[in-house]
Amino acid sequence: MKAVLAGVLMVFCAHATAQKRVPQQKITAQGTFFLPTALNNRMFTVLTSPLGEGELSVQFPLWKGLGLGVGGKVMGWDLKNNAFSQLDTHGDAGRWTGFLKVQYARYTGAITFYEAAVRVGYSGWTWDCSTCAEARKQGAMHLGGSFGYYVHASKNLAFGILLGYEADAARFTPDLLCLDDFPGYEGMTGPYRFFTVGLGFSTRFEKDLEDRW
Image (cartoon, rainbow, N blue to C red; front, side):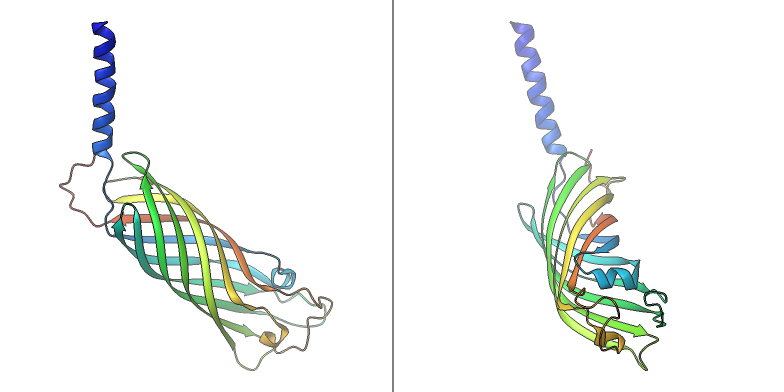
């Protein structure tokens, strides 16, 4: 009986110690490189190849894992010159986005945590195609969401993988390439919607003297 009680006490103490080891939320800076995939937009997929998307943000904890952040990101696409048989469409497209972020983060252990976030902001598109004399611009409201899981490599630095969804309140249309229509692809355009997979880092602003392990 004494052995059983001793074992239960040891488990309880170990659990309490582990709980103490879970870090508190701190101000953090995050950066992520995403690879976007266009959704439900056949013409966009035919015409473009993704170059990638980079994002940077700063986050401030508020209450029990909830926090606010602010940041920006840029996305690049290469225009294929063989999308149409008799039309040269080489060039590139880019998007910048500024956003506010609401996130919920929770540590699942001493060195692991997950984060779910929603982003709301504004996006500006620039289409620079050989079919136009000058670049065409387009702007729209932006909405996105993501889920990431991180593992600490050191006291202040963690690396993670993220899955996300992004949408801009605008459509990809022929006039952005100075065309009346997309030859052979009429009716195959749609709004900007993307599924993203990314690798990122998260760095906390805390003193190295703090013993987190």
